[in-house]
Length: 149
Length: 225
Image 1 (cartoon, rainbow over the protein chains, first blue to last red):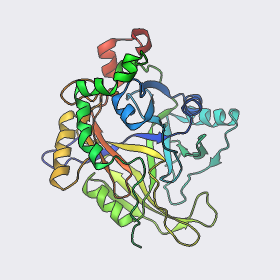
Image 2: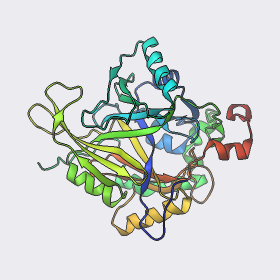
Image 3: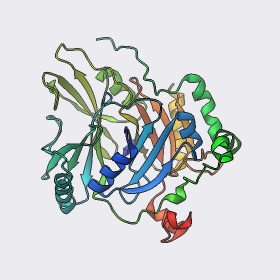
């Protein structure tokens, strides 16, 4: 549980989840679940969700294993997604073994990887490693290893 | 450079924003979902689908970098509304994957999350800044200090007092009145557009595997459908 003290204005405590547009839900779902073992946690479909019906969208929710959702994939049924509003997002591997397993899985899936952080000015993970790859819609994803994991 | 005025196609028109609170009414949701209900296509998508017992290879999300037209304008918005802190702003640097392009990055920190947000000005070889399209991510979400329903309501009130209008919320993403909008996750949330129409959620009290287990034990959602 994060903390909020006294009568100070309430501020953001941490980045919690991220919802990205994809062009093909099945393809992206396969990619994210196979690469990261993300767990499918819910589906908001225009035939079952009033908000999605009004917005012409379909959203698939994925959990890292604790929160209901950490990453969501959303397909807009009327509009085309693009890469024009986000440079990348970063994910921290559960431990060193998971970091290595993601890299190995990427290799097996034929996904090209690039060592180091994506943005040159980003801080190096303290004592850890980093590599980057792209999902099927060319969203850049950075995988970080934390020291001491 | 003066920011270009551009409204991405996925931005909720003001009229729809006014009607969006009706999603908290069960009758309105039933009305919207009448066609799939009458044709038998409607199915359950509710939080009960959740039942994630296996950890993934990922521990948490570390950072999101988003395009903005004007770092100073965006930084002020995130500081004033979200209470984020400026960590540092770098000099222009080569674009990580576009030859001849350049970026400048402003690193923002949340109370308990160092450099979780990067505000990026992207420039083409002629120096023209990218106008964010709004179509790469639907929203990015910050958990609020306190992480309780009351904290989101207090945050929404403090935002209103400071002159910020949400595009949606506060709502709770479940079916429980009075805040529930029939969606999934259990999080209490309010959403705002930043100056570049990047959609930002401020939330709390999302369902976790712990409170799922308290309700349903080890039964997976699919087995209870």
